[in-house]
Length: 126
Image 1 (cartoon, one colour):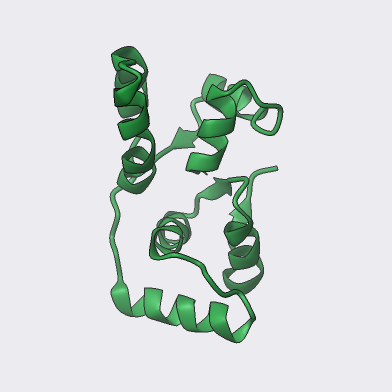
Image 2 (image 1 turned 45 degrees about the vertical axis):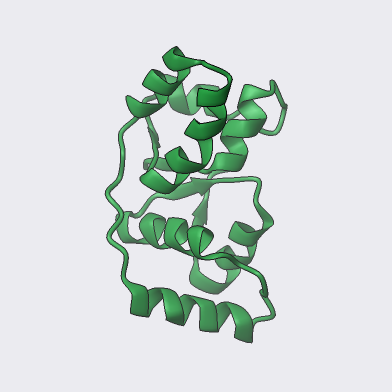
C-alpha cells in the first residue's frame, strides 16, 4: 500500500529527527506518494535555503492528483466538530480526503490526523 507522507514527517526527516525513521524504508521500497498541498507547504522553505536538488527530488516523488469534493469536506468538518475535534484546517481535511480517495496510508506526526483517523477511518503508517 502506498503511503502519503505528510509535511510533519518530512520536516522531522530533514532535521534528522527520530520520529520519521520509517521514511527511509518507504523510500527504499518506493511506497511514498505526495500531493500539491504537501509540496506547497515544503518547497517555499527549501527554496529560501536554496536547495534546488532537494526540490527536484521532492518533485520526482509520485504525486497524487487532488480531487477536491467540497461537500464531502464540509461533512468531514461537521463530523470532526461533532466529535470534539475543533481546529482542523482545510489543508488537513484535503490531505485526509486525498488519502481516503486513493486508499493511501498516512504517515504524519500531526495530531489532527490522529483525530481524523478515529472519525473518518484513515489508515496510518506506523
